[in-house]
Image (cartoon, rainbow, N blue to C red; front, side, top):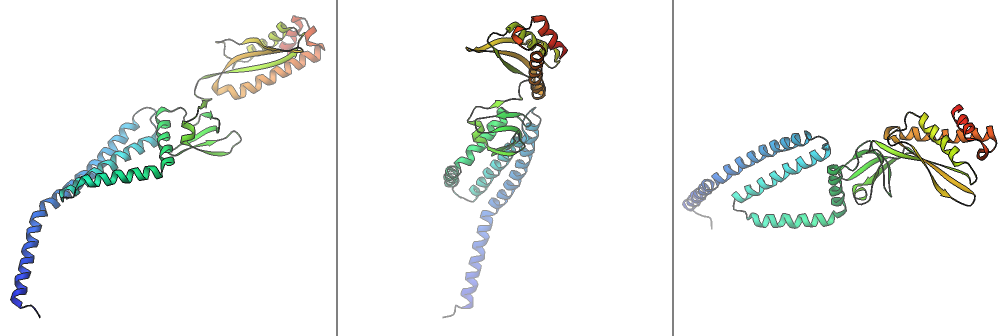
Length: 286
């Protein structure tokens, strides 16, 4: 049975009236939600820039960490604004927060290893046990740091290979940093026959150290007997070098020690029988 025109008109008017009531009822909520979204968007961008600029002005603060933390601030503000907008329309925000918490827990459990690397990356960037360009060594990796990321650290090994190390492996193990401190100690050991004149050998080592301008005078080079066996004696020279000179200086000093003792041996035949003056003269001639 088809509805009468009068009934249709009445139903239409009732629907229009109800829509008008709903519009009036939710118009302020819609306007408020729109204004809240705009203010939240502007505030998030402003606070993002302010936080990024502030962290970049901190001396030594890593740029990667600054961008990461500023983005966290921005998205946290946007999420809070979105929840507030939903609350304008009567949505139970407590259930939304509970759902977000459950989702975050599930994601955290699924990405446990990845989040561990992120947490380790943040700690590495904040505490700075090593920086880009420094040479480090752990039980698993060794090389020069090329880049420190939030997930992994890139290194270049001594033989020119690329190495990628997860941040968690670098954070959870002791790290040797060969570049951090300004000076390093270098030890040269020489094994001599047991009947050698140790004082003469010490003179040769001390002479080599004194002739190299890269050797630090404070603390001054020191010699000591580090080991004695039935047939040999190990004589060690300890000296300090600038970290920047360590590689080249250690190679040059090792070569100088070898050549000096070879020259003394060739000129005297038996180093243990050479008088002190002849030993020192031979070293100086070299």
